[in-house]
Amino acid sequence: MPGISVEEAIRSRRSVRGFLPDPVTQAQVERLLDLAARAPSGTNMQPWRVVALAGAELARFTGGVVAAQRAGEAGPERTYYPRPVPEPYLSRRRQVGWDLYGLLGIARGEREKAQAHLENNLRFFGAPVGLICLIDRTLELGSWLDYGMFLENLCLAAREEGLDTCPMAAFADYPAAIRRLLDLPESELIVCGVALGRADPAAPANALRTTRVPARAFAGFRGF
Image (tube, rainbow, N blue to C red; front, side, top):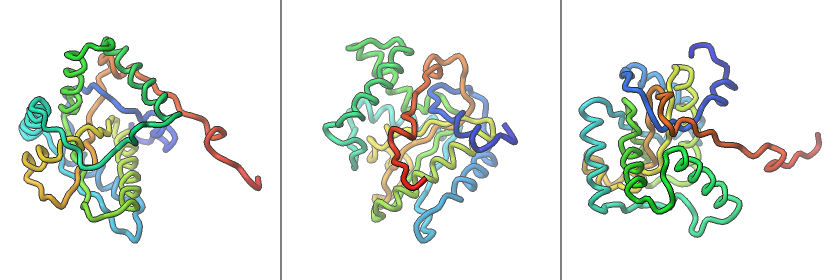
């Protein structure tokens, strides 16, 4: 979508959970990562590192992560959500979860269908490119905030290319398997995965539309 505005990129960005097999070239991925790396970072530390996977390497990797999940190897090294999740965050989380499951035809207690969805997640929802995002484990909260800006840049730059993304926290649950499959050192933490490709308009999950709380509900305005 060459020439789209920043606002159009932001409004059209969404987490896509079903992709077409259309290939994405290495040159395209490099361009997107170069753009993403223009994100601000404290004292220009640039804390991001990425492993980009496609083709046979992507298939080998996702097959290995799915096998690890089936074998019960999940063992996250950090906590993504608080325990317990307080309100209003719990209600928002439940709403999007049940909205998605409704589109996928997964009813409460249908564990086999839920397992199939999880495995589809760990296969990057069929995207032709999967990114594994890493960070040095010695870095602190500020660098994680910087990383979020890098990821948002990536998602918005993809929209300009006519591509879609899905940042995926699920991969952080399998650090041992991912280090083994990608030959990574213990010094690197898995931040997330990112699926990259063109959205499949026929995928039921891609009908999901989430809402956002307006600025007046979360911001205070003073002196205007």
